[in-house]
Image (cartoon, rainbow, N blue to C red; front, side):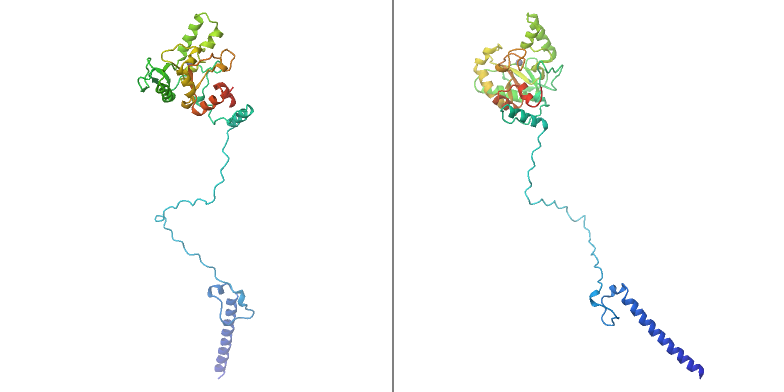
Length: 313
Ligand SMILES: [Zn+2]
């Protein structure tokens, strides 16, 4: 009998304990983060539960599937706004030329590279030593043959190959105008110039005077291969009276269109201390490129004066 009562009491105690334990577990759950994964509870709210403090589960980011081999690269979308044009970069040399030209009342000079071969300067103050053009071109002197040869041909007029086409077009333009034209002398080597200079001294000229007529070796523009003496075919004598020929007048009036200038104009030449240091030569044409040629011709500048704008002294 006693045993039975004892078992009932133990059973009741066990039930009470089980009930209390279950209640405690419920409370722990409601206050833990685990609630998030269960969502807001409905009913059985523990004491102090506030519906508006519900914690929501973080949204999982959907996995992006990649199909890189199937998706073509799309071109970048251009901005629709008009880009503001940047101020063109002006080199210090060009800025100097602009300032110098403005000070002289001249228009803005062209953006030329004064270090380029087209601007090569050879005069008594700028010797080019034994310089040789990289490749020669040989033109028929009366243009009766129109090809430009690259193998040495002493019976033709030699110039730097880079100006051969322009020189031919220039002379052909004169010929097409019905005027007799002759490519009298192009490239001269250092040795040829040396021979001509010594021959002039042998004729009795003082060295300084001879140098104004025949450039000292290493200072002749003919050695650059960028110059050519062009005359009337029937009047090759090179003196100032050549300016009376229609051939010269056509060449003078049209040379800039082909990139050439009258290199030693009368008002820049004549004595050893003149701008060019060379006598007036209405037959000597020099290639400088079309842009520079027009600027020099339009503004009555010889090559020395043109280059001085850019700081080449
Ligand atoms: Zn010449």
